[in-house]
Image (cartoon, rainbow, N blue to C red):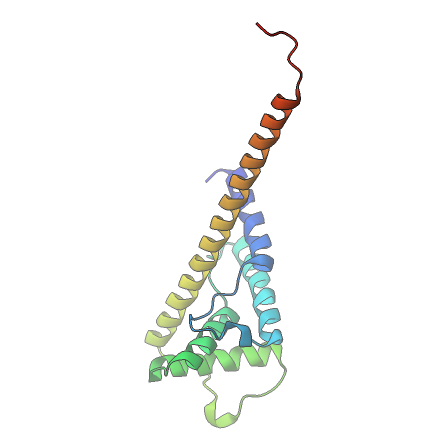
Length: 166
């Protein structure tokens, strides 16, 4: 990747952290996300961008994974692995953003290697999904811009008087 491409990707990632959609589980519960969680997602995306500048691989964030699992849990029951991952994320995200405590009887402080691997896979998938949406949106914007330029060029051609009719 050239330096110019890296700069464009970096800018796209920074803009994307503010404008990318929040990926939720299909089922209609996306509009029930609390505002504090939406804010946490944006902030964690910005932190992830800073980590990427220092060489870390871009991925989804804990807050994004929590939002996805929140909507999934409202759609269908989760097995014990995903329930524990959800409780782990709830503890992490709430502690960082809400300054409140999760009830001690449901706090999950750490995950097994298998569950941590599943969480990483989910976060990677969430990142790829939001990048795909961003790229499709950018392609659509470029297509619309080209069409507008073509229309404007055609209008100018039509408006230009014919000096010579041969």
